Image (cartoon, rainbow, N blue to C red; front, side):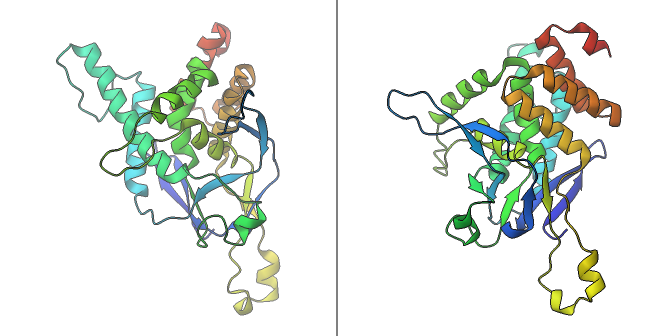
Length: 282
């Protein structure tokens, strides 16, 4: 569909980039994405709220190739447990420190690109957003798998509370060169999982030039590939600390895509967190 780009990663798997897609063309069959409000009410804990699918606001982003490269670098880092990465870490404190530094460099680069593609809080079912009051009129931009690679390993091993702690640390930083706000892992993860059951309608702007049969033959199609949707379903469960359900999603993913090394690595992380050696060996 128009505005939905597919790029092939290092393992020859398609990665979806949503670029300036009109809001009216996006639909979801599932509105069960919950996330914590960014604001804290006085003397109240952050309340869990119900969110409809949300995506990044439209902006001039032309770096999907560079973003895919950062995704590949982080994927290699995740799969190899930090022993293989395209980044050159500092080896002044020995090979172990170099591996950790290299992993941190790869993660930092991916966070930057993931935040660019998934960083705005826009609701596609918000009527104000549809009227252009919220976001640019060009449409939406998102890259869910970038958020998966950036966030899933953290919550798989340490849970959502650790993720929120990282966001608190990041909130204290600022890019002095650009003045941009730091990335928020929780926000980009919620944006990504809200697309897990999203459908996109065909572009009918030229409907007057189409025959009746062509118009009737057009129908909504899944926005993401089946592999991406299973990754996002697993991440959705991890964001709620439902590691057992996430384990089931990863096992189903590996049944359908046995060569998915990213899914295998994340499944092993979840199994370790659960203390479930049997699932890991499956």
